[in-house]
Length: 163
Image (cartoon, rainbow, N blue to C red; front, side):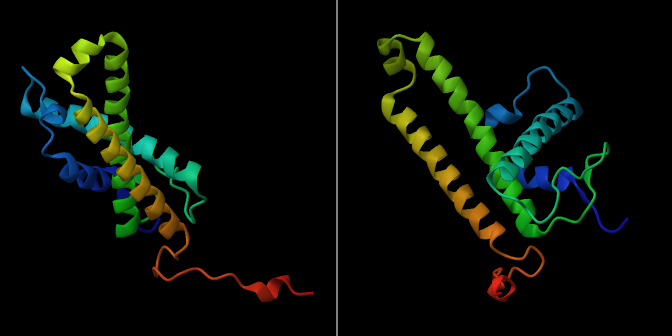
């Protein structure tokens, strides 16, 4: 079958990015093993969303939907692909917070918002998410324009279009 890459390898890359977020890891009255299971389940959902996001933005040279029920990609991901998927998962993670923030803003009066979520903190969060999205767009553009194995820039063979 050749090499394969586990979802866990990609997920662990994401978890290193967000390990300082106490909310992501805080589950009260739950055992450590249950927390690990819940975190993996949540992060796996982020991975599925990241794959959808990547495929919607470009046409990769490999089929990222080529995975099995054991949560293994049926091919070996490059380190660059693992990093790209983890970055897209990070974006998905913060987009969910943005959705919560928007719902929060709808339910609260302006004075409530000022008391609980100052405008500059909201703007800071929105700027951070915009920066993450921009970095991911650039990373996708670089990824799709290079050979996934060699990392060399793809070139177009114009001679095939000559008459």
